[in-house]
Amino acid sequence: MADVTLLSVRKLVKRFGGLLATDHVDLDVRASETHALIGPNGAGKTTFIAQIQGELSPDEGEIIFGGRNIARDAAWRRAVQGLARSFQITSIFPQFTALTNAVLAVQAQAGHSFRFGRPALDDAALTEPAHAALSAIGLDHRAHVRAVALSHGEQRQLELAMALAMRPKLLLLDEPMAGMGRQDTARMTEILRKLKTQYSMLLVEHDMSAVEALADRVSVLVAGRVVASGSFAHIRADAQVRAAYLGEKHR
Amino acid sequence: MRQPSPRFLLTCALLLLLALAPLSATFVGNDYPLIVLTRVVILAMAAVSLDLILGYGGMVSLGHAAFLGIGAYAVGIMTAQDVTSGFLQWPLAILAAAVAALVIGALSLRTRGVYFILVTLAFAQMVYFLSVGLDAYGGEDGLVIPTRSQFGLLNLTNRTTFYFLCLALLVATIALVAHLARTRFGMVLRGAAMNERRMRALGFPVYRYRLAAFVIAGALCGLAGILLANHSEFVSPSVMNWGRSADLIIMVVLGGMGSAVGPLLGAMVFMLAEETLSHVTTYWQLVFGPLILIFVRFARSGLVGLFPERAGDG
Image (cartoon, rainbow over all chains, first blue to last red; front, side):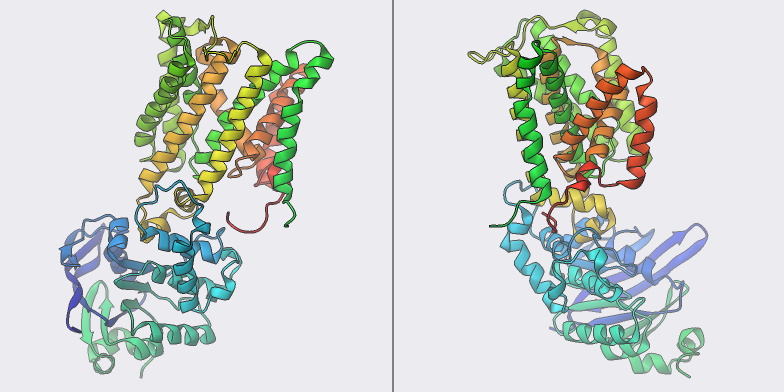
């Protein structure tokens, strides 16, 4: 069932005043596919991700997920339905430990939180999946360290672990390697390569070697428009893409 | 067996001090220390309730004293109507405070930051002027409460009995708030204070949890108001003067936000300063104000920050 479309974006439009940040974008993510979204700075990649996740609401267009148009749903509802976003600029709970960060992600998917009985951190139904999510990205040995005290690379991993702990149907990864050194980038690529067998992903990424290693399909966003879509090899060969974006890096 | 944390020892020491304090009345030979202490305990309770939303929830409400006033007025008005049974008075007064908190919270929690502070202040002022307009119940002059709440054999007119009742309810409030902070509900509240955007992305509808916390805090503060009315045997609009709301914030910040026991310490220090400094000069707040500023600048975790908890989020 590899051809089942999980997410289907149709004619999405977002305007900021006179600027057309998202210009009638069509984009699909199939089940168990990793779809990479690339493009130069300011192309509107994060704006696009934010509209799918629900932080921004689109001016026009449809976002079909789970057979329904969710374009008007609140962000938290979309998260409960299985959309998990990891942020380009790390967004974690700095004063909580890594474990508690992951516990909150598990808790969000475990029904309502009007529960006044047992302390959350004494609840194995929350802590076990949280540990599992940290283990999946190799951060469990740092579970009891406050997030603020983690290194940048570890915080990026935690960001991803929280998305995993939500047990999502689709991962929206906004530059998971942002700000990482070469070594951390290679390690994160390796982690994502393992995860890609179990998850469907929409991946925004600048690092072309990572995109080549991970993406089943690539779409190129330039000035809010999708200018090309296809396999990595196809995209690399596309003259328009080379002119707009890849030109300097892939001569 | 683990060694108790400094925070735990501090809590025990404070409560022991308050439990033994009535003995001082025997030495002094009059009830004055007991009267002051009862007031400290009651206002500490209001501060602890504020800590749930301010310290844990990050909601800076400048209208919390309104719930003190609503609880107190509910007792005063019912007594004036010859409803003196505490079994009836207290639940109804708490309900009144909770309903008011539901309405005020539902509207003000739609705003953020400075706007939230101002909207809560505005609502509190509305409640304040409503009480000024209650001509049938004393208006601006206030209302004398001739009899304290009747609880059968429990005689609230006995000052020592009443003091220990207040102290027991304070301990229960601190325990409740400290417990709530660790439950799933409390984690949502604290997470939303730390990173609201992330909470939404994780799938939490934060508004309803904040509103629930606002109602719980309002109800607990209403209970403090009930005690205050019984203690003073009098209620007037000045109970919920906006300066009182500010005092409560100072107690929480001074003692330590998000610590449950901090506001108790804050209330004790605040009222000790009020008692001593106001004897020296009527402008005691001129001295106290800068002290607060120094505190906010250099000791963000308040006085309880000097007594560390063990590491962890619990």
